Image (cartoon, rainbow, N blue to C red; front, side):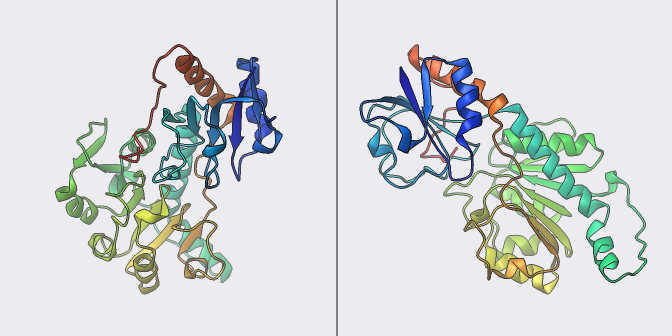
Length: 309
C-alpha cells in the first residue's frame, strides 16, 4: 500500500480521500500527522505546504499542486527532484469564468452605482450600454485566461487579450509582447488580470501601467496579488483615477485587517475563491498522473518551476 500525503491550510482532506481512494484503492490518502513512520509516501497533493515539508518524504515520485499556480513552490530548498504537476480541471476553468463574468457584468451594468444609491435610499438611473460597446481586456491567456476571454466574447463584449507569446482565440483581439502592453491597457475599460506569478510578471502593473488605463477604468484581479503594485493600486483607487477594483488575491493573504483596501468604497474584496479545485472532478487527473508516473511516463500538466508555470 502506497501513501499520498495531503496538505492544505484551506482544503479539507475527506473529499479528496474519498475521491482518490475510490479510483486507486491501493493508495492511502493521509494527512501528515496520520502517516505511520514506516509508510511508503510516494505522492503529495499540496497547497502552500509549510517549510521543510518535503524533507520528511524522501521517496516521493510526484507532487501535485492543488490549483493552477506554481508560485507557492517556487524557490523552495526542500523540493525533491521529482515531477511537479498542477491541476487542470475543466470545472476549475468553468468556476473561474463564472467569477470573471460576474465581476465584469457588475461593472458593465453599473451595479456598484446602484448599490451606493440603495444605501442612500436614492432612486438612481444609469442607461445601460450594449456589451459590444464595452472594452474588456484579459491580461494572460493561459488555460484559465483563455476560457474567461472566450466566454466574455461569447457574451458579446468587445474582448482583447494580452500574453507573453502570441495566441489566437475566436472573438478575441490578441496582443503579445511587452511592447504591446501599453496600447493594450490604453484600450481597456475593464481589465481582468489572469497571469501566472513569475519573476517577469511580479509587479508588472505598477503606477505607470495603471495610469495607462483610461480614466475611470475598472480592475479585476483573480491571478496573484503580487502582479499589481498594491500601493499604486490604492493610490489610483483613492484618487478616482481607477473607478473600481474587484480583488480576489492579494500580496499577503489573508489581507491585513488594517489594509486600506478594506476601507475603499470602490473595492470589492473576496477571499481567494474565484476558482478552487473540486475533488469529485479533479481526482481523476491526480489518479491518471499517478498511473503515468508508475508506468515511467511524464505526468500531464507538468510545471517548470524555473519559469513559474
